[in-house]
Length: 371
Length: 95
Image (tube, rainbow over all chains, first blue to last red; front, side, top):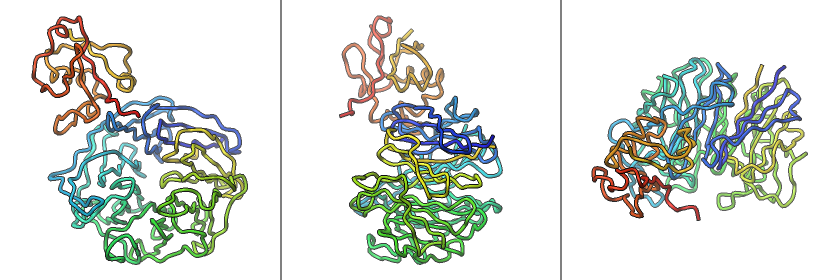
């Protein structure tokens, strides 16, 4: 019977939540890697029992875990993320130069075509890749060295590469996003990269329409329309329809266009979900109400989705990797909060229910749709 | 044999209980032996590139802080004799 497996990374471990296709009754398994920060987990689209997890901490550094049985048991694989060649410098918060130093893996993106290949987005920002099932990792250094690297500066969470979007049919095309540098695209498998930030405007940098320096919080793509990307920027919700050639704002009637998470409906490429957060100085749900906003028109016009979500005294945040959708006929939408709740909607956002309420702060949510 | 006490998180990572023992007479040899016996510990105690001790990792033995004595200094006699353990400690930074 079909079902879903929700992979939740938190400040103090990982959790695996499973349900049948009804998505009302849940089994909660965890914590795995208790006490460690788990920035991200993601399963292979080729083998759903193969799941990757980024486990890290200030004391003992970075560990990459791999499960081959759907998250029941785990084994550590390689964790050497050494930059290629001279690491160089990037801008620090105050504009001074700071050496590039590896801190952690923010995002793991398994290949669409090879079960042993996975991409890793790391802090300080760089893209790594394994082709041997995680035993070794090599930097795709064309991104960090494409020319603008010394101008990149960290966002509040660090100089992190947090988004990796793989083109569904063209293995050579990859999109990435870095906070706070912007979005980038390669068309040759990573050898060369192009900043794709035309149309973005950011009041936090001296030149508001600069080629790089934008604090992109997250990007999302529907595989049926890989030239269309949706972006939640620091401020502003944006879209491009030419693979990043130009962006236009689609914030429309959102109550605030600050936020972190963004995702696209599994079967409706023009249906987009965001969670408005008050502002850059107040990272909490807007007006004390936890609301997902849905646009069925590809942006511009948004409707609040509130049924089952707290509508008073709610001051949690929803982080950039903490929203996902499943692939069932009635598309499920999921998100986790810094208050430890994981919410699920089995009906495309119309109604919500908490799967679990008291986990550690949620850093990431991914969903696997199981046969 | 040199007795080594690992902190909770590293024992869990290495899937060991209690003390581990290694053939080692210096800190460098302790770290080499630990990483050889438990490859998952590579990178958790020292930087894999520079070999530098991670900032929040400390080495104690015989009521002394050995974190800054150098990797190749002989371990205290009591540690070499097995009467005292070599302690790997996560720095006290929890609040």
